[in-house]
Amino acid sequence: MKKAIITIAALSLFLLSACSLEPPQWAKPSNTKHKKEFTIGLSVSTLNNPFFVSLKEGVVKEAKKRGMKVIIVDAQNDSSKQSNDVEDLIQQGVDALLINPTDSSAISTAVESANSLGIPVIALDRSAEHGKVETLVASDNVKGGEMAADYLADQLGKGAKVAELQGVPGASATRERGTGFHHIADKKLDVVTKQAADFDRTKGLTVMENLLQGHPDIKAVFAHNDEMALGALEAINSSGKHILVVGFDGNKDAISSIKNGKLTATVAQQPELIGKLAAEAAEQVLKGEKVKRTISAPLKLQTQK
Image: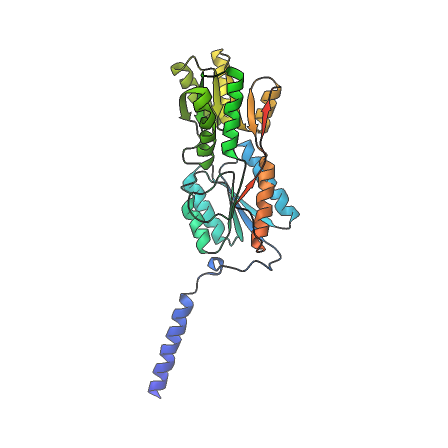
């Protein structure tokens, strides 16, 4: 009898131990193919930029159309906050993650966490350096950089001195737009200076003020986004100089400035379309359908003429 009691007690301890090793419900990979309602988490680099507000709206509209719930978090251009935000979304049990990285390298750990739990990741506008991303929904940033350089070369002629305002160091969009720009600019223009202004309008103004002092003879500026371009334009207007400014994104403020004869041009993306395509891709992946590794949204050079 005593032996039987000991055996039962040991078996009970084993079962309790086994239960304690069971992962929490949110951490269990789930089969979503036949699920009727999906919840997707959207992590945006910053909602202080009209471009990403439009991108968010595209996700929300398309998700609503498809009967999906969206939980939105704003990283405020802080890569550490974004990683924590994504971990929080995972713990909330989202079925898929849509991530617009602040820093393509820093977000990799959070992407890998999602991978380990079987949560699909869709990247918007910028990708992650490591971890599995089902698809990147973005414009062709390299092509856009080339378009900007070609336009400036056509307007100013070969060898014209230009400056480059770069985005957040480490962001894939920064690398790609810069790469595309230099494909052409290194042959047709003279890029005398380049400096990061972190995709921020205020920093664009400050950096441009400094560049004007060090390089008073530049004829044009290529900024990796419209916010920096508009900041640079303020600094140029204050200096009284006539310098061409080309941005990238095609946000509402930039388009308005171009129509008013102020900003020279922008490589216009379609952020709302990027959001729409990302939400569409998320549903396809969750239903077990295949998607392309890269989904492109068309670009257009918006000028004053």
